[in-house]
Length: 357
Ligand SMILES: NC(=O)c1ccc[n+]([C@@H]2O[C@H](COP(=O)([O-])OP(=O)(O)OC[C@H]3O[C@@H](n4cnc5c(N)ncnc54)[C@H](O)[C@@H]3O)[C@@H](O)[C@H]2O)c1
Image (cartoon, rainbow, N blue to C red):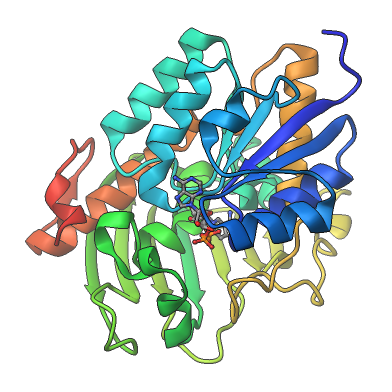
C-alpha cells in the first residue's frame, strides 16, 4: 500500500455523521473524502463545512477510488444493504450500531467482508473508554475474584421532538426503541466485560412518549454463563437525564463507571496503578444523557484511528462486528422475552416479529 492517507466516505449525513467526520479529521493517516446522503440539504451542508465531495448515491461514492473506508451512518434497518454493497466494492467498513437488525444479516455481512478481504468494524465506541478498558483488564487479571454482578443504569431523557426529528426514530421496523437504539451500547459493555449471556428476562414500557409506539424504557435481567447476574435499566423518559452507570462487583472487588468517569475502584489487593485509574474520565465530558448530540467525538476517533492502523498493520480491528453479534443476540432475546413475557434462553434465532410488534 503506497497511499499516505486512507480515504473515508461517510454514508448518511445526519446526527452522528459529524462525530465520524471529526474523528477522521483528527486521526493520523486518514482523510475525509466525501459525505453521501439522499437528503441534498444535509449532504451539501456537511460537504461544504468540511470542504469535501457530496454524493447522493452510495454507488457513486463507491466508484470513487479515493474512498478506501465507508462509515455507515444510516438508520439501523439500512445498514445491511449498505455494508453488502461496500464489501462487494472492496471497501473497508465501519458501521454504526446495531450492525444490523437480525443475526442472519449480521452473519451474512461478516462473511461477505471476510470473503472480500476488507475490515469490518462497529462503533460501539464506549468500549474504548479508559474506564472500560481498565475494568475489562481487571476482569481478565482475575482481580474481581468471582464476578457476581454486571449492571447498567441508563437513566436518560429525550424529548418528544427527538422521536419526530426523523421518521425512522419512531418506527419499530426501522430498528428504533430504547433497547436497540440507546441501551445497545451499555448492553454491549456488559457482554464485553461479563459475557457471554445465558438467559434474559425483560419488560418494556412507554412511560413518557405517548405519541410514539415504542418502548422508551427497558427493565431487564441478564444471567451470564459465568454465574454473574446483572440488571439493565434503560430509559429516555427520565428528565433531565443522568450519566450512565456501569457497576461491576465480584467477590474481591467493585468498579463503577459514571459517564466516562471511574467513581469506584476498590479491590482487596491494591495495585500501584489503581491510584491513576481512580482519576480516569472528566466530569466535564457529556456522554449523551440529556441530548442526542451532547457527547464528544474522542471515542469515535479512537475507533477510526484503529481502522487506519489495522489496515496499515494488516491486522483485524479492535472491535470486529463478529464481537458485537453477541450484543445483538442479547438485545433480540430481550425483545423476545418482553413480547412473550417469559425467560428466554440463549442462543436465540431471529424472530422477525419483534420488528413488527
Ligand atoms: N455510536 C453512537 O454513539 C451513535 C449516536 C447516534 C446515532 N448512532 C447510529 O448512527 C446511525 C445513524 O443515526 P443518526 O442519528 O445519525 O440518523 P439520522 O436520521 O440523523 O441520519 C441518517 C441519514 O441517513 C440518510 N439516508 C437514509 N437513507 C439513505 C440512503 N439510502 N442513502 C444515503 N443516505 C440515506 C438520511 O437522509 C439521514 O440524513 C444509526 O445506526 C444510529 O443507531 C450512533
